[in-house]
Image (cartoon, rainbow, N blue to C red; front, top):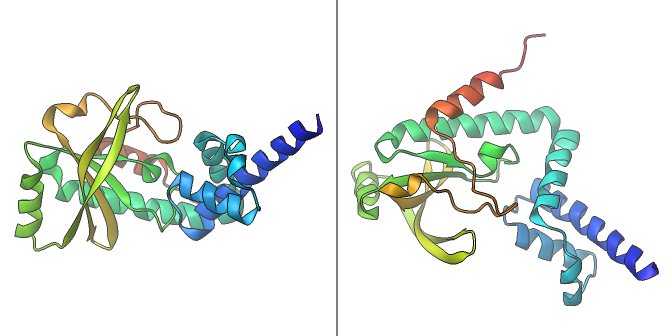
Length: 208
């Protein structure tokens, strides 16, 4: 009974500290946040069995952002979404979809805008960026689809109009099936430019 209570308390402490790290220190990876939280709480490697789920941490993160960051967070989130809309207009020929924390509402100023692009070949985006004289970095993004083996997708990191962008490049026909969310394993939510613009209109503060 005592051990169970200790495990439950540790799990809750890990949730709170992981969310604080993500909100205040700009950590965007759930596992990195949990590892930092575990070290700070003096929890050894054996405590991984007591680690909270990503969904628990995201729920706490949402509450923390509302409680401690309030209007400042709302302003940061709106700016990120406006930057995302501008980037999506710029990249319109690649059928961009917004995803990740900027869409779900847990993004802070440290979080890049993640866009999924659908292309014939990754080179088409690279040539576009070269024509625009935009510097970029090539990396890979590992994504999961249910129980299927994980796949690595080409990803480009760059800055556009003051925003850090992360462009994940998919085949043209992969817009019908979304990869799994790192939060709950369900299909990742994606938004078109029209859907994002509607979200921006709906989130305009009411005049006092």
